[in-house]
Length: 322
Ligand code: CP
Image 1 (cartoon, protein in one colour):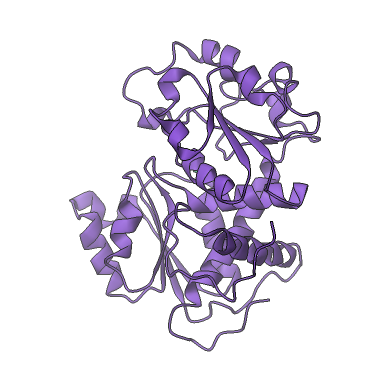
Image 2 (cartoon, protein in one colour):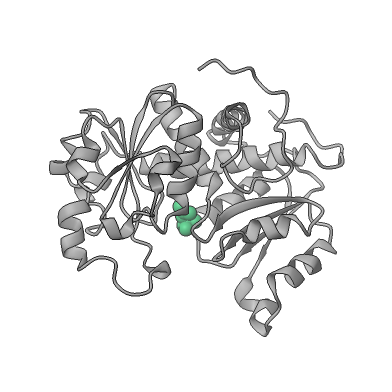
């Protein structure tokens, strides 16, 4: 796909992938590509966000997203504050909106939020003066995950268009699946989703995906196999009879993987539950698994997002981007 390059990213916030134009996605991926190069150098620091304040607000647990947002902000020279929700006034009953208004009074330039409620990032964006980045809201979206997944695929395959991507597992509770479906569709990839009927959202085909309950059929000829964790923390009651049975039908092992293209890439957003949705031999297969590469791309994508969004804010006289 040949897209005209945008001169800048056209939005102040990044709340989701849904509704983003392909050239806006391409802009972030191109910028992230430059940051991959920077991150592989000894001196990884730039002054692009010098004078800016970034507050990370994680109401849910995180390893990859929270660490990479902190690293990204620091590598770009921002003052990065990680608000500890466990030690904040949230524990005394302060609402998300009151927390947002309180933080806004301190003039942050960027708020990065992960929250258990779908729509929390959107709500925050309506109340604060700076940029808001959604680091995952309930079962809604996880836009930077989809961007880092797309960057991983694009760097390996040269393009997203035409790639057959099978997203496998707990689609119902997955914000990663939703953001990836929007992004991959926008960029001309073919998306299949597969899982037990209990973990497939009603009318998911309306998002423009092929729906399967048979793993082998879903993987047939796939270029990319993207595995998802069972999101037990979002389930009330049992959605699968047992982990053992789930692995038998939907866990990725070399036998099922043999149905995909011989060079199909294996992806997982993490954290992984080995032996539940993925076999260790597949997860650690150095010829096929790009799971560690996804983590590396995460830092670059988050640097690109911070850089692109803050270009909309009043100037601080910081260094231009690399
Ligand atoms: N992929 C992802 O969002 O991982 P974390 O929960 O560790 O941030």
